[in-house]
Every structure is written in C-alpha cells, then in structure tokens.
Length: 120
Length: 110
Image (cartoon, rainbow over all chains, first blue to last red):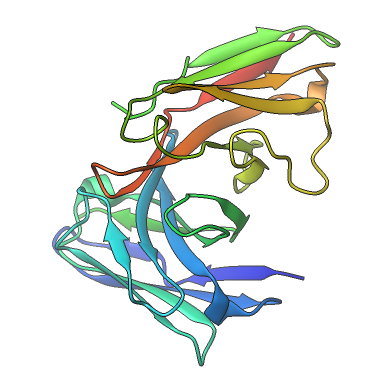
C-alpha cells in the first residue's frame, strides 16, 4: 500500500525557517517524481515544487523561488522541503504527493498534510 | 488569481448531470494534459481524472473528462450526495515551468 507521511510542520515566526519531511513507503520511491502542494486555510490548492526521480530536474513556483529548497534521499525513501524566510502568506497545509508523470501534475497519491503556521 | 479559471461553485440535484469548466491558455492546457482532483471536506485531494479523460482504478465511470483547445471540462453524471466536494483542475505550464491549479469549484448536491 502506498503511504506518504508528512512531518515537520508547526508554528514559526516570520523570517524563520522550517524543514518538512515526507516518508514514503509501499512503492519504489526512486522511480517517481515527487511534488509539494500547499493549501492556505479556506483556500484552494497551490503547486509549490517538483523534483524528478534522480533530482536532476527541480522546479519551483515563483512564490517560493529563492526561499524554499526541495530535495530527496532515495536511500531513505524521503522527500524534504527546506523553507526559509517564511512569510505569513506561507501559512498552509503542505502536502507531499507522488507524480505519475514528470512535468504533468498527475499526483496519484497524497499524504495527509502537515500544517505550517507563520505568525509572530 | 489562479492561472486556470474555474467557476467558484456548481450545484445539482441527485441523478442530474453537472459539468465544471477549466479555462487556461496555450502554455498550459493548450500544450499539456489536464488532471482533475476531488477534495472531500477535511481530507487530502484525490486524483479523479488524468491525461484529460482517463480514470484511475476505482473511480466510477460517472466521472468523465474532456479537453478542447485551451479549455477542459469535468462531467459528473448520476449525481450523488457523496459527490459534494471541491474539484480542481491542474496542468503543467510551459511558460511558468511549473504546475498550475484552478481556483477550485465547490459542488453542492441540493
């Protein structure tokens, strides 16, 4: 059974940093691209970042470029999102999702999400 | 403002057929496939339609997708109360070099 479990969310002050993790199981993690998608409270989905299976290709939304860094460790079946210079508008539930197609946003499995709150 | 445009709401009665539109541009829907997601209240999104009109295993055939030019549509036939959810379209955008979602459509079953 495919499982994605996010962790690392919490309350952080504006300008602070946080590192999210996503533990994957039930599939060959090293064969799939992975994505982060976020959802602000009461709002719609926003694509954040994507990383290819071997980390060769990495993409970011303009809203997080230069502040967030996506990475993965295929040996540990884990996906990460390092978030720096956090702003109030980064407050959201962050989902990791498996991408069945590179550059396709075909996200066939999702985690349960982890809440990030940026507030003083 | 979302790159892909969806109506904020839609509604129908049980048994009816409803459609939800998704409008984009040549850099996203016009040149890439469209996927649709269903998000039930308080849960993570679920892939409903991929590659414009394909259903993942387990998705009822009441759900169908189509694409024409720079627009796409999701149709739900035989509407059921459990279909009440938020629906999102998504595609890759070649100009932005990233993924884009529609703003979402809240479907109400009257």
